[in-house]
Length: 198
Image 1 (tube, rainbow, N blue to C red):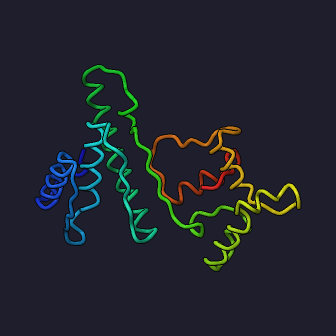
Image 2: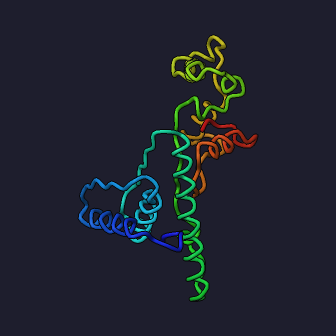
């Protein structure tokens, strides 16, 4: 499921080598120059492979910076939206009901440091990135949380809510299928009905 009209020869070569590696359950190192469409080629091939081989595990895609991660997740979102469109068209043409896979059966999240994801109203206003990390730890450390009922230590309600969700207490915190950037997760966690730490 390649979302663009043209596949460049180097992208096709890249995807073919990647497919050979996946079929062989091996490892590979692939290199392409900057700006040749590595990200879309990788996501198009891997997500298509996972779609047709559901037993294949997770994809972990790492970037150096948050902007690179956000750009990669937007590219992944384009690939999945294209897949949804193609599959919905095929199913409609065949008169079949829509399935979960046709609606983008994927969960992709961008994860980063506390300083990039914190939604606590006081902590996130700190100008110094290191201070955000420090204040977050002061509110979320396990020893702080365990003593909070004894000596009224202040804790982070967003983190506490997340911990309750993770433990199965309360409303639940499962993310619906989709592609979420750091900004998407922060916005979702900050909603009044959620109030959980991304």
